[in-house]
Length: 112
Image (tube, rainbow, N blue to C red; front, side, top):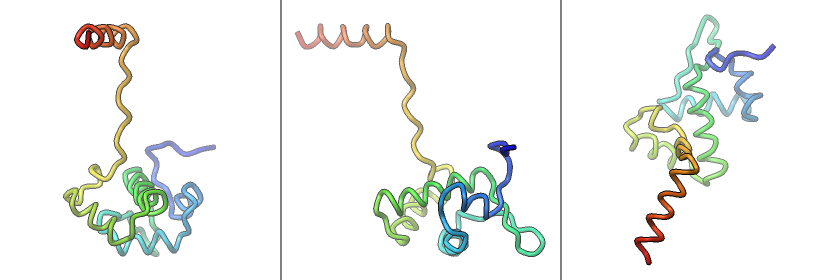
């Protein structure tokens, strides 16, 4: 049985899901003040869905985009420290085909 997208995740679940070691996640918590999972008794960490999204974004910036930890810190700080600003950009909404064809026709007429 799989958890809901809105469910909290343990550090082990986030680690398995994203392929990031648990000690790396704990390290990132010390380096990125925006990343603050809930800690229960015994320091058990529970990541909210927004925390998981932020971890994905940090991982992407570090591993795929070539940022350093300091670079990601500056990027997140420049965005006002808001985790919502650190989210990946949403894909553009697709327009219906008839609207696209009408726009194309207007552009062809304008360039003719």
